[in-house]
Amino acid sequence: MSEGRAHLGLPTWESALLQGTLYDHRCPIKEFLITYASQFDAVELQQTFTDLPYESEMEALREVVEEVNGNFRFCPLIPRRVSHEFPLGDNYHDMREFLAAVGHLGKHLGPIVLRLPETFQPENWKAIVRFARRCPKEKRFVVHLTHMDWYKKTECLIPLVEALKETTMNIMIEDNQSHDFPTEKLLGGDHLMVRFKGRQSPQDEQRLAMWVYKLGEYKGYGIKNSYFFLYEQEEMCLEILRKMATSMGGNVHVPEPFDENADQLSLF
Image 1 (cartoon, rainbow, N blue to C red):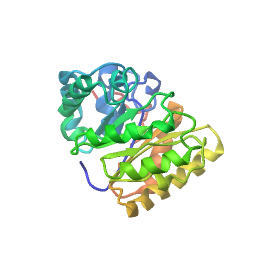
Image 2: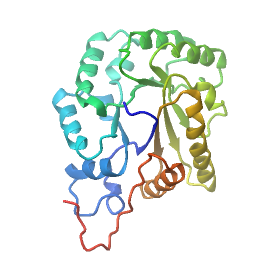
Image 3: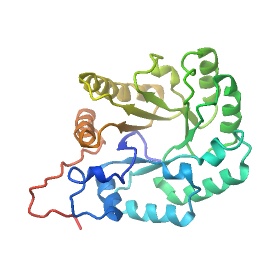
């Protein structure tokens, strides 16, 4: 895993709505990832949530990005067959198969995301800890808490944060303005994942500017690698991420804007 890096990206590289902004209009969908990985350092791998991945699929993704961007990371979601369709921790077979498959991403494997169902209540926090303790120590994990009560019942959230500090799992920070719980109290371990959900309002830029500051500040909490995914209208994402990258400086890659008037319209 790369040291001391902020990885910026989007929820997916496959959106056709990015044609004309990130991809030129003649770029075939099968080549989107090459362009995306040359611009950004991370992406969520959401297709693993619905289906168990094949090792060959993960190897193919690795081969696409490994010569384009050595710092690129995929952040796959644990399949719903593990997180939703069985009690958490009971489906050992599919979890082992999933970990074996994503292991073929090699150094391009970022934190693995455990998305919990909306019915997973805060009172069950100890089940998350038990699951995290069984996760392989050489990999990094984040848990996405989706039940609406997590940030209301801090008597469950606070002990969860403390217990997870002994594991390689952290809590995903989802910035959608739905709660005002201090984000620094959610930090633990050496990695951080943030999902930023814009509201297409003037406050978005203020919130993003604050995250530029926070991602720098959190290095003092022991965070070596941060992953920031922007959920926003596609045509706005690239401009916002470029502003963030420029503001953060250092080893953050600044994507080049797509010039639809250039003589050479395609990279391929």
